[in-house]
Image (cartoon, helix red, strand yellow):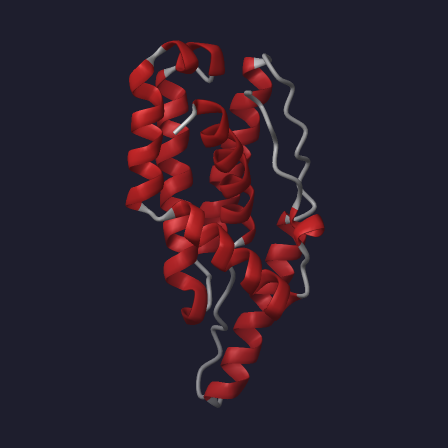
Length: 164
């Protein structure tokens, strides 16, 4: 796998991981259908807020890269904890993958050029991608966001290309 494609997937997955989680209702004694609707509503409200995140990523600016991915990790952690059951496993895979990819980037001090210079970096990213089935999870989350929340690919943000 080319390192450039991996970065594209990483940026896309990070955003979708963040938008891909939502909330369960804390209501007690409420009919299941009401809880399900409430969970979807909470999930969608959070996903819509996250989908408005600033996707600006200045190529070559390590502080920008670090902040971008730190924000994605934070959002994915908050959202995964409240994901409705029907998308929870996907949200957790995206969240866990985002955290592991962040840690990998951190070992290279958030420098894509340092990662590109190390042949094992792409292999490590692929292991994480495969472990959490990130490409498939990304597709599933995009479909869920569109079908259940009305959030289109364009509203989810554009893929950030940071390496060629």
